[in-house]
Image (tube, rainbow, N blue to C red; front, side):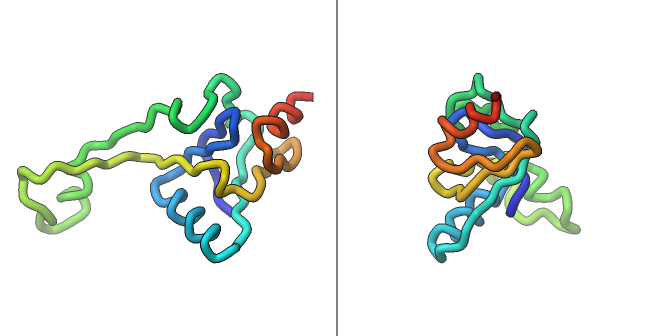
Length: 114
C-alpha cells in the first residue's frame, strides 16, 4: 500500500519518487499493489499520467545538499524529479475515502462521482 498525491482519470497516479519502482516489483512478484488517496486527489481533467506536470527540484540537491563533500563533479548534470508516475496497469485497486475503485479505472473512478 502506498499513498498518492494525484490520481488521473485513467487511474495513473503520482507519488514520491520510487513509488513506480515498487509497483513494478510488486507486479513482477505477483504482489497486490494498492494506492490510497482521498477522493479529492482524483483529477478528472487530467486524462493520463503524461498530463501531470512533474516538479523538478534543483539537481545540486542530490550532489551536495545532504553530504559533507559533493558526490559528483560540479559540471555533472542531474535530473531530480520530486514525483514519479505509476501506470494504472500496475495498480490492483485505488482505495479512497468514498470506496475502492478497481480496473478499469476510467470507468470505476467515474462511478465514485455518484
